[in-house]
Image (cartoon, rainbow, N blue to C red):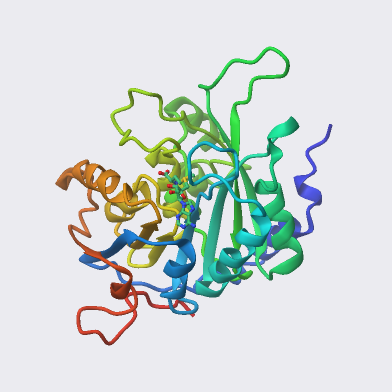
Length: 323
Ligand SMILES: C[S@@+](CC[C@H](N)C(=O)[O-])C[C@H]1O[C@@H](n2cnc3c(N)ncnc32)[C@H](O)[C@@H]1O
């Protein structure tokens, strides 16, 4: 079957704009200075209390990996899932800056697993009840997983990327995949291809092949659904910029905090389970001077919701809305 992406009106408009030397509305929207120090507010709190403490339009990226009623743990059960989820989804939209995005992890649940909600439930709700735009459905394809005999063994999970507005920030160059030397050489000879883009590497596409953490992975801190840092890293690099703020109100193992520190972003990470503090200290123990951005060598950790809204002087939100 033919590739239909060229029939997509958005793609055609963007290509025409590029040919005419134009820019997407998001380009130039965000200007930032790389900070020398970042700030990370952490603690134990219910998601709605965390969100209530955050000013409007102040967050660049929300990494959102909610429970889905599949009884993986005590926290994974809600009698009316959507009734609960719609409140934090509305709050998430409020706190995002106009250039901001939310990346919602999840999967489609099959057969009798569906309970009252899954990622499809959330996507459908947002489509009808929110102004946010579905920018991509990312397929996280992992090579490792359970075997199956009555159906094809599952090897993917989805991440729905919603942007607050069409002025969303997206740094493709930060996540391009370099071509191998042989391919690069061949492509550089191809007159139809732009040598600058060839040098930068390829768009990693919306299918991300990255392994899940296995039982004895060095990264594991004990959380049952911990996401690998590489997956969070790609979201943080593409959808936020140094000095902006990343929020995770279902922070789980604390991996978002670690990635934010390493990538020179500020962050806010809370989970309602007090064991979060133990997991987080293991994550922080993995940070070394060599995995910090050279340009952002310092960071501070502060605990408690009361520290979200202000800096040390108590005057200013720690997060600046990119207008
Ligand atoms: C799927 S896990 C997140 C895993 C995390 N992304 C990671 O990679 O480590 C969902 C988390 O949400 C937390 N949680 C469940 N209900 C919550 C609520 N109402 N408020 C805050 N956190 C909640 C659970 O304790 C759990 O750690």
